[in-house]
Image 1: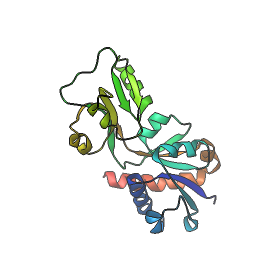
Image 2: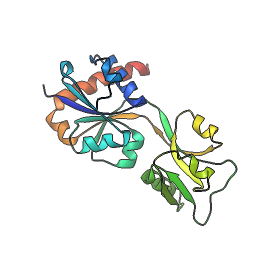
Image 3: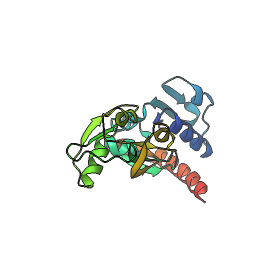
Image 4: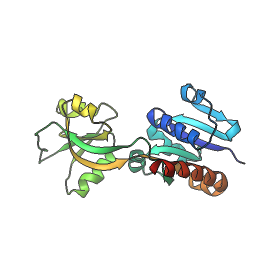
Length: 211
């Protein structure tokens, strides 16, 4: 069987995805969770893992250096990479929302929206018939309305604690987010047997959890 190369994001998604793979019967070594290595081979399962930044996973898969990847739906919506989405893994649930300071209205002339999701934010506000100026930030998005850089932010919300601690409130929910298994189109054809088996085993576990 051909080796499957899987790009995985570091952090919470990685931990939940590794647990899901183990539940599906894959013998992953304990050091997979603790290693600082960026490439980890699991020869007994014919797998190789790349550990990457969440926003880069879909890029590795699109260019074929990874056959498969696990990426949040937020990344897939923002990046619009040439990959196939195979299954919803139902892990790391959260959502994208519009937030800002309480009891404030958007500047009607030139509203500014701070976000690390410029494509998603632009598409959303356009669909609402609103023309906005997008301010691209890479982190600490909550700071933008506090210092007057933006009227609103578009960001991931999980528990809502970060917004609350910074005195912000949610105004609108844009879309629910979970992590997805994605595949390179060429790999999907060339390694269909191995990928099909992985999808089947993961799908069975996800279905069991849903009952």
